[in-house]
Length: 638
Image (tube, rainbow, N blue to C red; front, side):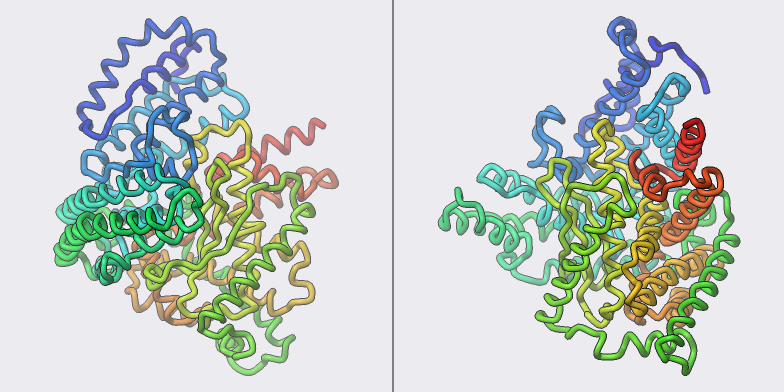
């Protein structure tokens, strides 16, 4: 790495922070601004030289975070940052989804890497040093992805090769953000809401152009995924505008706003209805047309190998999600080995409970289909399931001091995934709280069919999605006082999902399954499910399995319902590598724990170790390993 003095390093930071691109900039204009900004170095050098290297670097990351959030206003809303922080109003805008915005994001990746290369890493300490390592690891991988993706690109990392699928894209993300994250506490918030509804048409029309570009470049998801996205749009636009969730949810939320009268609410409902009819629905129509045309060119194969650069994309995806140098073939075999181990443990519990006839999965499925373990597939049954989840979350909260020193403050709620999403949504997921505390963490569960959730399987889902899983990890990171904003904007699946799967085992260590062998069976089946993902993800994208082949293998080896497995396989098809992150991350955390126990002996404290995993925030696994090794050395020095 090229090393500079503090003066030069800080000047580079100032240079890059000055390169703000508004929504009308092209990539060339953004690059031109970078060149022009170099002229500011001499004028800023004097003030920059007064800063410490770490302070200068963190100031740089803060400006970069603001730059990204100005380009991504719904992200800013989700995080709960203030207008004062960004220096502008943003709750009345949507992101720019145009092709030009993608080029700007790619140019920004290059700028950030150039900035890091000009800094002496050894001059940084504490949070600044960790943040540098996080950014360098992330940006280097993003740069490798850059030549192969044309739509779904984020300057700090690439999470999916496709802009629109049956699972994700502006067609799903925008209405979700408006319904669950956009504030509606007064009339000004309502006006902002209308401004965003007004902007939906352009957002979706721009997305349609990106979908067309991807199709022209040969980077399309499988046909069934595009058809799934088309189906989502068809369902979301099937009702009269006045009955659309974007109208109804607004009206319902405004009922609790005392400053807004019934007459105003009626007026607002009429305005929202007009905007949905005139802006939202036409935007969806434009996107639907582009998706239908793209589907004509799309491959029928489920794996990314079928694309021109598919093999390279999958190699990068596996490394992004925690493969740590393992090949796809090695990950596949690791999955097979783990599946065999976990099934053997399940067999012991089943036999102990008197289930001895038939194969392991056959006996497990019979248990899940026993009516005494199922909730009625009715509204009242779904409500009882949600009530039980809340009780489980309360129980585990009281036990957290046994496994952690640092405890989260933000609350968590469980909510049902919206009905219009449930056909293609995963079984459960988590969204973090806003940074300002105005919105809690949310543990979402798919309740299309309560038969997917035998009662004894729910505790483990709760421990994964809420505490000690995602909610605990995310909120501890958000509550770190000196955490730079840019770190709150990053998510590392191999770390976050690895922790959540690790947390399922922590729940067992807390004694939550001591008198609940079937609950422990549910825990093992959850781990089995994640181990099977190593097999089917590599099967789809490396071994060229068909969609049907992957569905059959996973159904036969996990005990999940055929419908649930089908949704999962379709998810893995459009999100290559991500499904491997859970088990790869968990395995690495236990390896680091074993390393620490062996190194520290009697000085090892599980509570302290778990804290070390969390208190520096989300990081790529190589950075985490370096942090743990540093902690071990500190402990040895006393």
